[in-house]
Length: 493
Ligand code: UDP
Image (cartoon, rainbow, N blue to C red):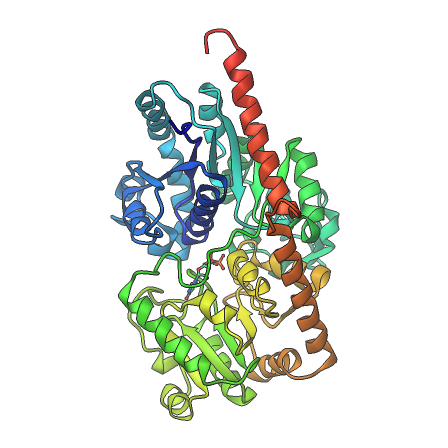
């Protein structure tokens, strides 16, 4: 009889930017490490996840009950994707109510397995409270950081020493993470800029950090060679190992909307369009799954794309003030005849709502990515050696750009935030610098290719050569195994 496989329980926060990397990690652990995975989320998210699992996956999906309307949220809103930006913090706060249900879920799981414990529980950084539950059962607990440690360290340090808004020079150095050099107030999310250390955001942040104090370690979706300062910072702060196991990436053609009819059509349209373009000639523009620009920024961006003379694919979403998921043709925020003109000349392709990002980034015609610099988008671009024109919007995106531009040299910031004024000529200048044969552009492309090689080396998992990320994953699994062995030796277990 085959020995029973180890089971790992995974529990992400309810946001695409968290669920996607968790699911990708789950698939990777299942396929490469031969463990079984129990993936926990709220009912509507489980429904969505079900349709995006690869056909050969045996990941077990478990629902945890959650009713958004019980928490002052609109009904049936179980993901940041369903919510306007100002309600996202409320969803984070509401997710604390999942604690008793998660306890019961683990209890039932162990009972169903006749007392056999899972090897570990990997929860979201927002669910650090899972550590107490894990330890009650004698199970190893790790959080998974879908972002890099550098940006998380900036965010952590800012959140722990609010307020910063009284700083007259508008710039400050982070007391506990000076490696990030100077931070400008515009590099703080709008909600952090207004936070005084006492209101609900500050309190929630402190609570989240406090919850994480008893974790046994953390998996980080980044690479040791690129993220050393942040990793060292967290290992010292928490006194626990932080294993860089990244990048955790889905192969092109898979993902949350892989089976969705609209997504299949969009993928075909993009592929056919890209196939007609010369190598390294297309700018891909996207602001991720939950960010969008203002109507005026949208107009300037459109003008810039036309004026640049470059081929482009632009994922167009309704601007701020509109429902980001609504049907929207954007005509009133675009120069007259913009879409028709670009369709006729075949110079620009507008994708409404959702594009097959990995397929676009992996295509030989793609040259650069104008991105909000969400970490998944960053890793996806760099794993194909695509340099980035950064337009961070929120949260840790500002520090991702900082790391990418100041430390790694693969990014050029073009604008900041959803309300700043942008001028089309400034955008054109940055596009030119990155895509034309300027010294800067050449240097960025060279660096992006070096990073692609670092990524490929770090995930190599062969007997002859094991990359640092693959070794970090070994270390994590060994630590979990060790805790279980020790728990078994305690009388009564
Ligand atoms: N994504 C996509 N098509 C889109 C927009 C986003 O495939 O039109 C995917 C993208 O490839 C990435 C994720 O959604 O995997 C977005 O995550 P990221 O961390 O970049 O940004 P977020 O959406 O969390 O702000």
